[in-house]
Image (cartoon, rainbow, N blue to C red; front, side, top):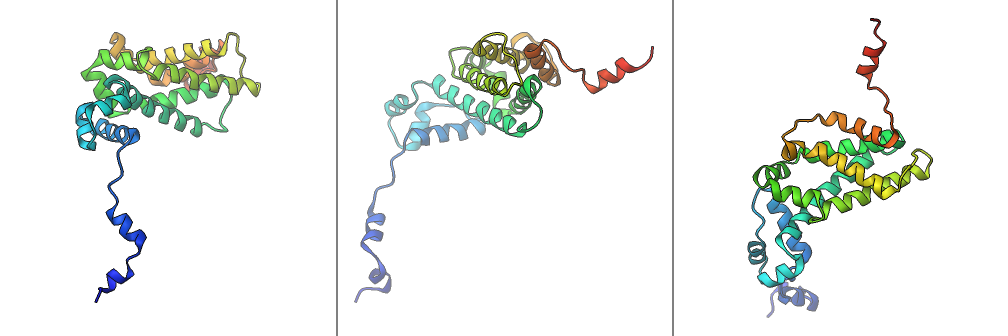
Amino acid sequence: MPSASARKSTRLAQALAAAPAPRAGPLDLFGLAQRRWRQGGRIDVGALAAELGIGRATAFRWVGSRDALLGEILWAQCDAQMRRAAAAQRGQGHGPARVGAICASAMRSIVRSAPLRRFLREDTEQALRLLTSKQGPVQARAIARVRELLESEAARGALQLPIEANTLAYLVVRLCESFLYAEAISDQRVDLADAALAVELLLSGRVAAPPARRKAAARPA
């Protein structure tokens, strides 16, 4: 006589029990690479493929190259910080000051990333190549994101665009890079608190004095 569990088993339950495990896909490889990155491990495409139970050739067909995979990991992190910064500034300020605040907020979050700091320290040349040149996706996508922000502010009359938006976005991104990676590029130490003012100055040609400076200026001689 069949057991109670057998009697309750449906054709669907039996089919599900017999079904093979789902096959890994490109996003599974990317997710695993991101976890490895956050944990401080080296990104080895062959090792990731073995862990997922797929062939090395398949893994490289999905990601292109190790540099391409690293570039996507770096962009995912930068993109998340830029989106959070924009959301946090929603409804606060406008025009050059708002753009500067968003850039500075995103930069503060990016520099706090332990995996990114480790990458810059251990392989400075590769990190800068992937972050600040056409060899990686980060710079071009950051320019596109800043361009959207500039055009949005211009559309609501909060910002004048004296030159083409994409060119201006490029200048903003390069300025931010000079703050973010100053120590790695030229062994300079800069204060990220000045980044928002620098972006505001670039976009408007002037900047409101910070509170401390206004007080100093107002103090009688």
